[in-house]
Image (tube, rainbow, N blue to C red; front, side, top):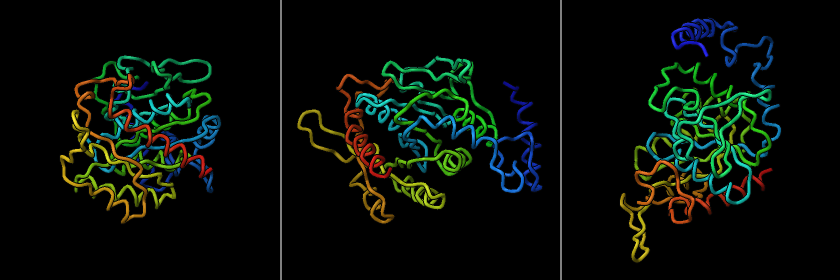
Length: 300
């Protein structure tokens, strides 16, 4: 892998070429790379690599800190426990958390004649993350947008995903380079949008909804995270942040609200998500996983 300074220099030259309306040999992900309407080199590689992946779903959020990666990991665990073959692409290059949540911290990616080999969690979930190419989990990925996008595209095009029923893509928050690249380059069955009941979170969710619609990507539904806390004695749902506003947002945009996920004290301070059946967080994601399976099978 090139040094950060060398790659940054190459990216600057590539972006200059893009701004001048020229294609660049230094940036394979650039949409202007081809001539006369030719597709970028990534397209054929991605289509070929994903030919054995039945369903491809991106998990997105408008704002950071809403628990998007937790929802992604919980969905992956539930789909795996339901008997499906599952992979997770951690496309949040600057803030990769999936290895922690699935018990793979410290694992490194290995190569074979078939490509980059994903790490395997104890629950059989295949995982690829930028953290797995860094020297340690606290090493920052100080890369500009085009470089991060190149890495995400390489994870899709060069990883030996094998046969999968579901590939979940954990995208960084917002409407930046990586979400745009994934929505344009990967043939997605749809996106799942994660939000909290915060007014700021929902304001940014509306931008994600409009982005997906502009790019003709189906929206499978909204998930409200940290929706409530369940009393351990009586089971009553306590709405710490007031009554849900996400349902009204879903109705405004004609998007289904496919589930609520509670705050779970048993998950506090724990890196790896528990699968012993005692986690309210994991169990609350089961009906959401079942709804997702239903939706993608009936849209096919």
